[in-house]
Image 1 (tube, rainbow, N blue to C red):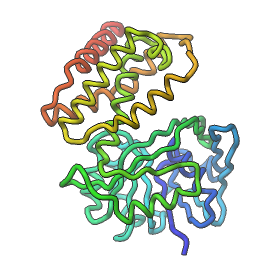
Image 2: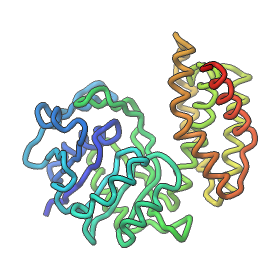
Image 3: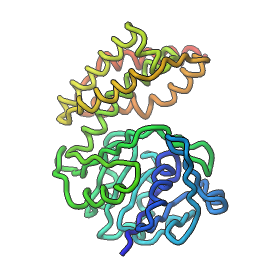
Length: 316
């Protein structure tokens, strides 16, 4: 019997997941696309892949687009791809799609958002972590998968930081095994999330201050030293919290980034503006999360407050 997969949100990550899973004929895919439903229903989804090829995912016998969450059928696996701040208005509407046997997977950014999902569906296995996937929503019907294939997932528990890998997680892993996307199983969703934040937050925060690219920061001895100090502070905070960063994985990603060719930023002010928009969902949330456990990140906090102050002054 075919598994029924529900995908909630067809943006960058949701579009990437939908595109690849649409090629697996053994699955019935039901994708919820609220704002872009009309366009997708008419022309389908196009996913461009890292090698430049295209996947055309149009409605057919095993791919169905939905505009109304209430029309979703009961799902074996429900994959949440909307921004985590949208969960509050969405979770209560998923009762028809989420049965007693449904496995819930969240491919969302942030920290601590799983508690609200677990509160709505306390008896359903919930798997969370992070995606090391760079994807963009180019238009209402076009998603671009730029690079990265790993999704690191663990079972969430409101009572423990670590849980053993179970049969449900192996089932989710099996769903993706014929696609380029790869699920890596682990024991702690928070550890996976903090590993990504340990990489992203220093880069994003310095990019917002300097208006430079990743490669420009790595090429500058002074900025790279500052980035490394911020990363070390986050690693130490994660260890104190009890969900240590995966240092080996982090080092492998950094090694790949250092091989990238130098890209000079054409418009530094525009880069600053764009990167400032990322800080509330990354730097600010990390600081708030650690502060809630009385774990300080003094160097990062000082840098972030200075950026906010300078930005406020420039807007006056």
